[in-house]
Image: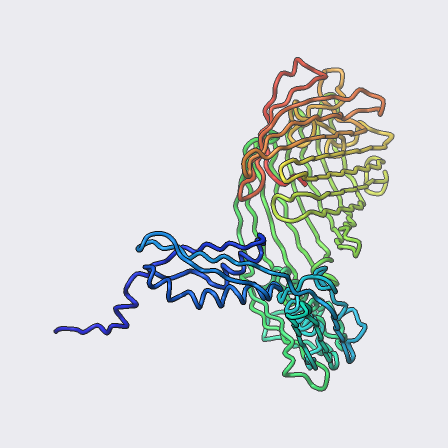
Amino acid sequence: MVRFTPPLALLLLTPAAWADLEVQVEPAKRAVKENIEAYIGPVEAGSRNELRRLFDHADEQATLAAQALGYYHTRNYLHFSGTEDDPTLIIKVDLGAPVRLNEISIDIQGEGRGTDAFALTLPEALAPGKRLNHGDYENIKTQISNRALQYGYFSGQYLQHQLRVNPDANQADIDIQYLTGQRYKLGEVTYSQTLFSEDLLDRFIPFEPGVPYDAELIGQFNQDLLSSGYFNGVQVIAPAEKAVGDVIPVEVTLSERDPHSLGFGGGFSTDVGVRAKATWDQHWLNPQGHSRGASAELSTPRQEISAFYQIPLDPPLTSSLRYFLGWQHENIDDVETRSLAAGAELRKRLDSGWERTLGLRVQNEIFSLGDDSGTSTLLIPSLGMQRTKTSGGIDPAKGYSLLFDVQGAKKGLISTVDFARVMGQAKGLYTLFDRHRLLGRLQLGALATNDFSNIPPSLRFFAGGDQSIRGYAYQTLSPVDSTGENVGGRYLMTSTAEYQYEFIDRWRAATFVDYGNAVDSPTDPLKTSVGLGIRWVSPIGPLRVDVARSLSDPDEGFRIHFSMGPDL
């Protein structure tokens, strides 16, 4: 069978031939040059004859592109150069005098007049005497329309929008009149069929029925439901076409996630060596959104198992009650402990951005260190405050984190010893000129007791290691007993000043000074160490390798530290 291919099909099958485009603007204006290139686009011409047929189109587009930026008196000169098979279209543009703005009138009428919803941000270039730019005129119209949609003025309309250009006078006037109409309100919330109770879901709603419409409230509601961990799909809409009067119903479509998940991971640091971790979470187990989970972590110096049961409170995303049970065995530098703890924590994120944790736990710990050994049972109330603010991502450019923790026990109230313990930590990060980073850290702690020998090691202070004083092994800095063994201190002071320089994308060199110690008296001597390091910002977070040496104890020699995790 012989097939006939139509000429059009042959044309479509023929590879396109492209000519070069060169735009010259006098006086030089980069914005005009780029706009002309964008208006004309790729030039499809395989020869000079084909290119000559495009002159009128290119001339028209160059004129329109210049007018869009306020130049209404341009003169275009077009010619071509190059070979017959490889031609170049050259457009020389003489701009002439620009058109400048004269009168600008933007009048918002109706309910929205004078409200924050229509507090417009005018660009600096949109002012009398400035060169006309059609894009600025279109942007202000887009801003008005977007504000109306964001704040629920769905019946808003333009009474007038004109850009009047008088090229002879080199002047342009803008006249915009917009009638906002009424502002709609958010109504009752309804949900698709779901396993969760309506009482729980209603606690995620960030507004009361009847509040003025705000698209940010709808977005926040959607994001909070997704962040709850209960769903793998959420859609929150408020369709204006379903409004009853000026009230729009809110409709939520939900799809639950698989309630169970298993996780396995591992890592390495010079503090604890190789470690492995396994976790199990049941993200929801009833219509009230209760959850539970368990984890186990194993390394040579430390083994621990823990479990929790969590109840969401109001609001459920930022407030919860968690019950926990945990067992831990730790043996570091001849300090050995076995502890069992059970208790509860009331967690809440405050409006100020701080996360507050109120805790109460019973802890039993069997320990031995140096000349001290024993068993302690403690009923410990605690208060923790934490706040972290960063520029975002796994490798933020700037930010800070603050941590404060206070806890204690009273002998006779289950506890075998009196104590009060307070600890605070501050970290700060700042990037200068994209490549230079400054990192600072300060940690302070104090322990008050009249029977230090019965305080378990988990409540005493130790220093040294990857996250403390580099140049020393993990938890090897503290007061010692008569046998020379570390027994922990009553006070802690550690600090770091670090400078990082990014010499290749995602690779940084670092130099640092660490200063501090764990001591029995604030007047006891502190240790100083210095070092160099390398940082790699991996897809899972920064990896750090440091070589440090103590200036206070030169006999310690050089020590290599490896760790991973965020700087803040």
